[in-house]
Length: 141
Image (tube, rainbow, N blue to C red; front, side, top):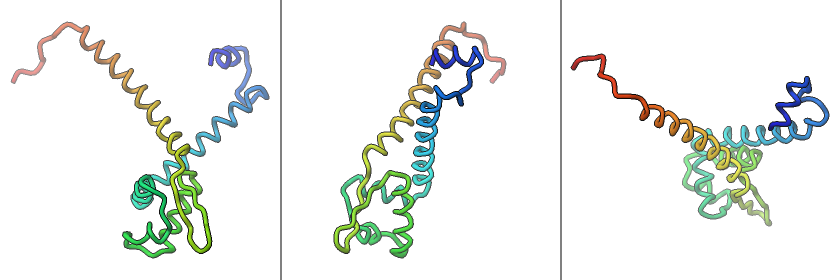
């Protein structure tokens, strides 16, 4: 990070050759997260992921409790698969779906980092407010 700031001050740009691998990695991670959150934005897909977190299941098993056609469920599963959250495998005539734990960990890590950042900010705010002398309220009740 310090090297990037020093390079920025010296006129270097993030698009310089030495930064391209880092930039490409960051953009790929961002794209994967975007796809994951887009996939999870739909309640039906969240339901499918919750079900698959318990155990792998066939497409027909996943479709059974839902009030939609099998092709509609397949479309939802395709979105989840393209996001990387779900992997499918076809053996004979049965397509089995399972959650990809690595993809779920990436989403969890992103959320955890944001949560930790906001907890530190709120802790600093709490410490600041605690250090302030008590002042009488401006409003009389």
